[in-house]
Length: 275
Image (cartoon, rainbow, N blue to C red):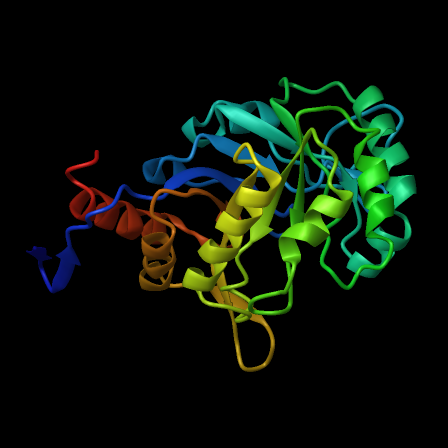
């Protein structure tokens, strides 16, 4: 059955919707964590970095801060930020982050020790990303063991359907660490259907539903820059992720209020029987 609203045809879906649980923000000086992502179901906010390149996104006595900081008290009052997964210490440059992974673990602990937070974090995210080309990935695993729990880390792959990806992950991932799997749709690596197939296999091998999907809410342009994905592109991803837990990367840069309103309306019409 289809529902026609204006010029938009919305097909009523037969499976439960994707659970859009969280939204990322990659902190920079050109954006602020402001939005209406709660209309999609979001209740968890993840600032990707607590400190990055040696500077903090929080006020602290012993760590220098970036010149423009978010109003964290206001952020924590938002419906989409009822829960907060706090990003730890990282680098904007991935090569540098991987080379300094052990140091970033120590830096993360110092950041937590020397910062007075205006909220209590529900969990932590270590922002050094892994893929199968990283030969020293076991150093990441050992660093994760030293960090507070609950803890998250993220993985990706430049191959559409990487072989033995689940076994690679199992070989270095500590037991008490959960995983954000970047779907690769925004970078053009794979389709959403391929992504959900990989996520299911990862969960089958790792167990306990420890792997969730990061929906890349951007697309690559011909000149290798990024643009915001259209609502229709995001809807196609959400169709593929029915029944899955999903986190959006990232809200402030790629999902403005109009985009959220459009996707939320589609959710209400397409999944009326489940809501």
